[in-house]
Structure formats: C-alpha cells, structure tokens
Length: 357
Ligand SMILES: *Cc1c(COP(=O)(O)O)cnc(C)c1O
Image (cartoon, rainbow, N blue to C red; front, side):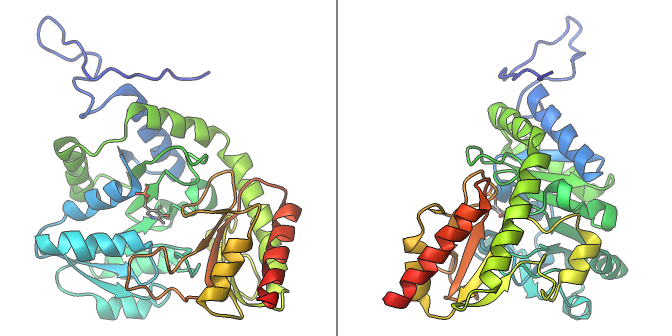
C-alpha cells in the first residue's frame, strides 16, 4: 500500500555498464522522487514533472532556463519571493521583468515586449486573492508567442488544474497544502507537453542540483493521500470565517473568492472546483491595530506560510520584502483543520480587544 522510501544516492551498474534498473545517481533521479513527480504530473493533467528542494528553487529553475536578455511578466500581486528573486538575484544575470495586473488581459498584451518569454500568474493572488481568467490569459499569451506559467500553490490540483485550461507550466510550493503538515519544504514544476523549456528545466534540475530529497518526497506523497479530506475542511471553514468577517463592523474588506460579492467570484466559480482555505481581510484601523489583532489571537498561530493543519494569522506587509503594496491594515489567514466555530470565536475576541486599545 505504501511505496518504500529509497535513500540510496547511487545505483549499481550492470556488468556491461548499462543501468537496466533506470537509475544511476540520485541527483539525476531516484525512485521516491520519481513517485512524487509521476503523482504530481498525473494530478495536474501534465506529462512531466520536476521536483525541487523548495518552491523558490522550482521558480528559479523556470527563470534560469530562459536566456540572458529575456524579459518576463509577473502578476503585480504574486508571492513576494518571486519578485525578490527577479529583482535581487536574476537581474544580475540580465533577466528583466515587469509587473502587470493579470485580471486585465488587455494590460498583459500591452505590456508584452519583443523579448518577453512568459507570463507568471497566480490566481488567487497573494495576499489580495485577486482572480485571473487562466483560459483568457493563455489565449492572449499564446497569441504573443509566449508561455503561461501558473503558480498554483494555493489551489493544489484539487481546486484548479491550470494545464487543462491552457497554461503551459504549473509551479507548486509543495511546502504548503500538498505536503500539508508544515514539516516539509519542497517545490515542483509540471508541464502540459514536451517543450524545449521543460527540457531545459530538467537539465537544470540535474546539472545544478536543487533537487527534492527522498524523505521530503515521501512525506509529500503521504500528505497528498489525505489532500481531498483536508482541502474540503480548509475550504468549508474558510468560507465560514470569511462570512463571519464580512459581517463584522471592524472589518472593512474581506478577500475571499467564495463570497458572492468578490469581484472575481464568477470567474473563480467557473475555473475552480472550490475557493480554497486562504482569506485576507482589512480592519478599520492602521498597522498598529492590525498588529494588535494578530497579537491577540489565541487559537491562530502567528506565523507565515499556509496549508498546514493549524490555522495561521499574519500581518502580511511586515513579512514581505519591501517595497510592498500590501495594505498595512491587512491580515492574512491560512485556515487549518480546527473547528471553524473556535476559529470564529478567536477572531471575534481578537477584534473585540482592538476597540479597547
Ligand atoms: C510559499 C510560496 C512560494 C515559495 O515556496 P517555498 O517552498 O517557500 O520556497 C511560492 N509561491 C507561493 C504562492 C507560495 O505560497
């Protein structure tokens, strides 16, 4: 029932020098990583996957498989680490980038340059939970002769499968929902078809070596087995929390695509199989008030990251690499597996205390 955890770094050759068992050296490939790569490719509806040591290693693999002088477009509300990677690391290798609101397909086309190789999009975005139309983006990007990459970390293949909606590559931080227990750091790139870019990503994986280690792969496969049950509860509780927050007098905005008045609700309803376990909200107050709400939480843990069994609460702007456009009164929640009534009660008392300060 459970595939073994293979820890070997090296594999015996046949007397004639062949590798008839398929493996030679673990950086190039090994059985447990193979299991994870095949599973993720299957779940996303792709034909290949490369697993990495972190989500950012996966992102780096995509960008470093382009060429110096190339240009990429990223969404203007993507995971802050992607912007940091491009601004602080890859600009020294002459990979240029621009930001664009991926909700606006015409804006993407207008921002496209001759050397633009790909668009990197996140839907829902992080931390504003903006929804972009993947099919429309894929059509526009392909018309420009480029590729669409979707960072689908917040969705997992259970909520959205961008490759079936026209995206060329899907990227995951498996650190989050896929492993699901806040005890693994990992990443993956999955491809819809055989492309020269994906071939270069595989070459990069082997040649530069930021591979997912076997135990992390094994734990991620273990996490994936309970993904359907976990996602269902993350989602049901997130919806209840979002509805509670939407009715609270000290909350000015709630960002959760499952709420009918969310501007992206209709698109999300069409392209997703659920709205996920992440929710952000803004309070009627400033940075200090937001910090105090976070500080008053008792069941939520004050920590970054997401997708684990424990609910997390975060003052997001102070976590992101500056400069950030994340509002100072915004709080980001990752809804875990606890009883949603307890989570709501916790937020209620934390918001209550803010009035007295
Ligand atoms: C966490 C995260 C990443 C980075 O992944 P790591 O595993 O931390 O390197 C990238 N994209 C999104 C959407 C994330 O949430």
